[in-house]
Length: 599
Image (cartoon, rainbow, N blue to C red; front, top):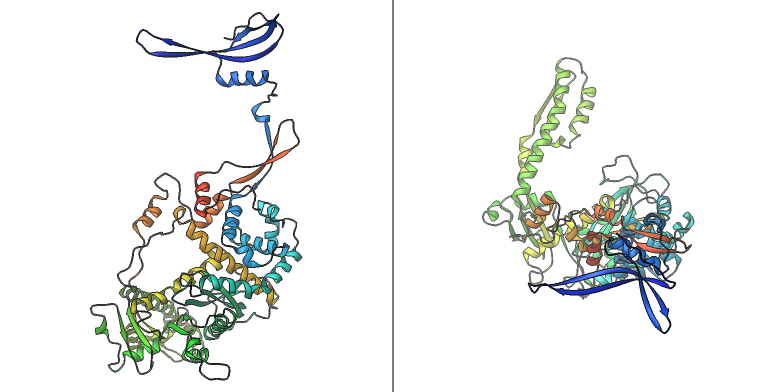
């Protein structure tokens, strides 16, 4: 209870009196009384009058009375502050911080509005991939638009920034090449290259053409684009080609870029089978007049042989025999067909079993499609060699197994049998691949050659991130050639950012941080016990959940920047929401504090 005393004139305040009492047991006890007192002057003396005893009140009630006596204006808790606006901030702040740490703004070009727009497009492609028009709308909803000064941009501003970026492509990629392909950063002098494709919507782009679709989009015009990376898969350069460009032509183009625009005289180029052909190798190491380049300016390579060449190495007691793999899964051989080159033959039993199983499944699926046709012919419901042939052709090409079946058609009969000799001949190659390189063994041993070739998986991973997992490059809606190239360049630079973000955030995601070493580079990769535990338990030892990369960005988006207005004022103050432990950890892994603004 609060006890009110007789009052005199004077200022009131809250006073806290403490006294110590020692009990008979020797224990010291501290007592505190909280009083409302009035101080007044009695002649020459200052006196204190106790007006109320607040000792029995809750601490927050005492604090409120004390604040009131000090002249502070108290309002109900729900009316103390007002949040006038809130915008998602954590995701764009994290990606922007990573971009700045990587020096991406300076790499893009001189400071100015075009660079701000280009940087915003790259960050947006990582955080919220979408069309350029949807990105414009999204900028107004997050702090990225305000902080980079692009919230009021128009579609024409976007296209102008894309044109500016496309003109800067050579300079940007040359900067990345100095970082990751130059000898000081890349002692092996090695680069990986592969080609992919994506379809376009529309028919008026000069690059649009019909070709082999790696997306399985039949009937669509497409573009091809080749990605050049360092040995760890960091994107360094990208080139866009017409949709009917073959692998060898793209390889020649990127080799010229590396030599002429990046100024790298000696490199080991790693490419998939069919890309680095004998003709391309010869052309790559010739001057424009057809003469051979000097040794100091020649390129070496690592690639794989196609199936016919492997079959030839096996035929007639050739250098590639099964006995080589009785106790090992790789062996170095030589052949007169490849003078001055090393051939590394590998056999992966797991891959062999998988291909045998897949082949049998496809053959069985084809026979299942053919069975109703055979029944219709026997019942007389399907007649005529031409009509029967059309139906058989549709079925037998569905799973691309026509070469494994012998088909006999008359006007009234249909006989289909497996060509077991061809099936057996193909099966002899199951699990085999042969690598080809002129790099001396003193510079690159057998295991290192295999590892370098298998590192092409990093380029394939980058393509997955660019096309579907993270950056959603496809389909392409731009019509002008330079806009298509700018769009692909934006996705490549976003992939460069994503590469570093995924690595930095590995402790928060399902990424395998320490995959176990393999006995030989041919054996299949395995996940570590820690990665399996991540997938099984889905939270870390502290109880925090693991995320996918995209899920982590979505969680970071819940960290908002709020505009707060206090009661009785018209001034707003920017304040961040209280970060979660995961959000704090994400910024710690980037080596930066959580910023209130991006600039």
